[in-house]
Amino acid sequence: TGIDTRHIVMTSKMVEDYTGMQTQPHKAIVGANAFAHESGIHQDGMLKHKGTYEIICPEEI
Image (cartoon, one colour):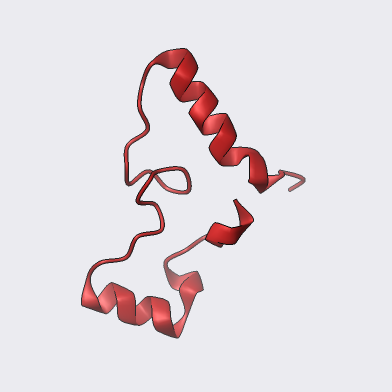
């Protein structure tokens, strides 16, 4: 796509600063808890195949 994913979080924080609106903690990709996994079935799925629940690797942002 040509998108440099390393700038997504920084851009999101810039929008927070300009608008004064805080990003929801569970917002996909940029939320503080975006890559947190809690339930047992969900964690099991993550261990078997991360692509099931994560559209992008945390390391890419």
